Length: 200
Image 1 (cartoon, rainbow, N blue to C red):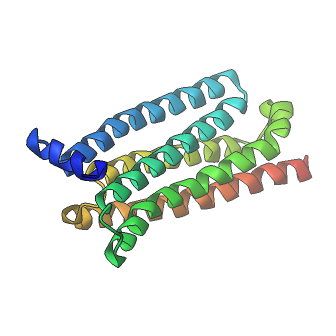
Image 2: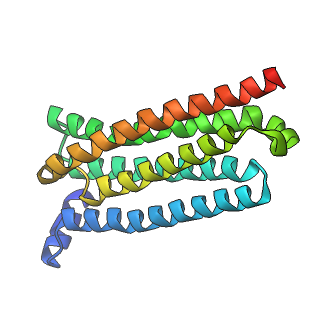
């Protein structure tokens, strides 16, 4: 008997449902994901208090690592649930589970790019930057953190569970709106910074 046939029988014999075991692993990871978010907020706050852009740059990289890890975990869970062979429905489920990650990654990658491009300018002119810059900087960060917590709630209902699709649809709509707002705000932040360079 092949090993991948023995494992389900062993788990059934011990009264353990495979889907429940996979779901527990996802919940364990989501607990770590919350820790990831809190550490990122702490890094950003320290950077703000120290008056250096390094903190926010590190926080955005930290968040990105957390999202990529969540992406990998959820992909593995979908692969395990469809181990008997992928159908068109499995592919649709995979796409639906991955879209929120992509929507959250877009403003994060944009903020990492912006932070790396203007870091030396901010360090040299931190006390002379316009108030609008600080407002938008904090606003973008707030929106991204809100996205991360919404993403956490999205996966908290389980991965590939059809019964949670109506609720997940609401979370996806919220994530889409937050992604548009945070991306637009990040672009505005870049415009403010480059305008300061030109005018300054």
